[in-house]
Length: 607
Ligand code: G6P
Image (cartoon, rainbow, N blue to C red; front, side, top):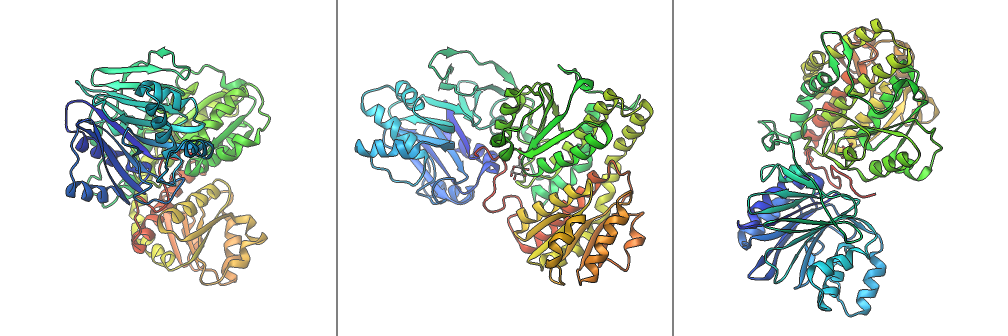
């Protein structure tokens, strides 16, 4: 959730750390801080709020030193104040932490009894105080770090520096990601390879439970029992240059405009356009023999999974269980051995999804993950990864990753349908043709920007908004409501259109706009009746339909956005783009911090 970085080498550490923190700010932005070693002493600068505040502090009080650690925080324990900002420590040690130390209260009590004085409300300070306790007993940094790690429960990625040890960083990971970067006579620690991308592409990943001693000459890895282990150095494919706004006002706007490209790029990996067939990579299991699938994910990725369920059940005839990962991991559903465990995640690091992956593996599922970050922890723990080729997604609210996930799920559905015999070769070719048409249809959605802005003006005035959809448009409505909440702070609720009569209809009056996603097709008439019921009760209807449905809605809806008409299969992909655009436009009107909305973080690596 938080971002951590460490540098040891010959150059001025602070600018390197600060620059890396910029690339990690998507993980949290409640506060930030840097500590370095200056003539063997630990010096530190911290600030509440965004990194710009830390920049101002550093401008007033520069920080020298060639070895240091930095942190961007997403608060779990303790308010996002300067005092609670990382790094935490004592004159002997300074620590940055991502995760939650679950037994921090016990440890804190023990340490307080031993005379340690805590100065923050954080769980993380416990780590620093415990290391300090061991250093004070005469242990070396290595021994003190190991003794500390053995006592920690919960999730952590840690980086530490030690007074009097100018050329040493110690890192550790347990349930939260940490990578080691290899430079020329300098070495790095980072929460992900993106943070280190301009510094080095040579990366080693710590396995869960590993810890590492890093000096300018290299890294020594140890496992949880303290045994020396080797971890491979790989060259990552990430290109730092792609992490820019490219002239857009916000990353969210830039990433919305990337929908057509990422759909195209993602499909290109999985489709042979000449034969119009889906070509999955070699799988270590047989698609035809799958008894059922269990899908899990969090946030927007979960809604992509819900659309995947409509497809997999309806077109491939595969029974699907689906649940959000935070529920699934403690629900212990009986899964049929040999089933498909299907995980969906942009980051590949979301703590609940990762835990659900491990639970599924333990219950005999074949693990197939749909991931955007292909070097992530989930990628390394999956049997098969189907990549979404969305490129770095920086805006905290996910946009382009969603349609890329749908592109993969659509191809997977076709492949499973073919393997199970529910789809013929000719049907596959037709469906593939529909998919290949998506990038250009997606481009046409942007022609509707003026009408979407008109809708935004209505929504921006509301306190509550109801989103309605039926069939695979229902998860699209959920995505629309989530996006609106996230970036505009307006309360929104998504309902299956047919359920409206069982409750939300009582909310309807002229102050609660109803945003409906209503593509033409089998379910059009049914949902139209629900909209008529809402209209009859004074509801203001704002409807996303297609060119075919448009005429039927004129006169009924206040604003109609007519999207390109596509098949029922691909409609949710097209419909998602404008509901996300609507949230963006409302956020602009409300003047919120679009790319970094309050309280959120992009990568939720704590439970
Ligand atoms: C956070 C983000 C969402 C994202 C969710 C799941 O809540 O703000 O945009 O959908 O995490 O993240 P993942 O990386 O697993 O897709």
